[in-house]
Image 1 (cartoon, rainbow, N blue to C red):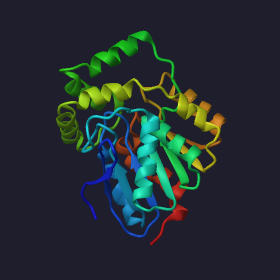
Image 2: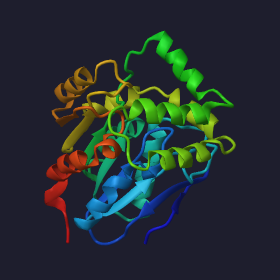
Image 3: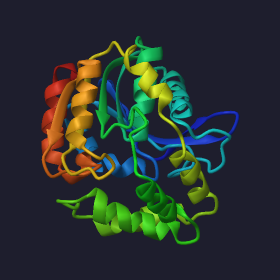
Length: 271
């Protein structure tokens, strides 16, 4: 059942892939400016363990429709719920990276019956303080017409600080090609301007088992350990710090990531 499929909405289409089968469903959602294939080193292992893996693109990214009225984490949460309902799933394990971790928190808080466990990877679930200089540099990175090339260069050089995936060059090329399509960078810019108030507000209502994974060298956070400790104290979730990893530990250190992940969700595997 591999191959791109779509959630149909009134505004457009959200692309996803689904391995199918009768295993426990695991929905994996990427961060902004990225592709569903950021989970490419995780999906095969989980499938072999008996899980049904569903990887989903964000609004404006991947094979999804480009133009939407809203690109916020709340809108991503709506798309996740729509996917669950359209596939007729009763209970899923939900994994979100960066902004989609905020969306996962919202879904878990608002629809606890749909989510059995939640995994938050490098989670943006509050408005992290950022210097004016760094904010200006980030806006320059996303500026057109050079935005796609600068972003993919920044991502590969800074957000994978220690162990680049063996296919990093090919992955960056596919991401850059996608972002150069008309309207993609504008969608990225709009998503990057979203606030995280709804996710932070939802943290106290997230009553499902949760695990958070962060990299010790994630440059998107002023102090990754401090952020992880704050989240653990706020939620009581299991917290994992992967030494040396950046913003995408699932692709930078997949073996370590899978070990922590399967320890957390392993008992739910179905043959």
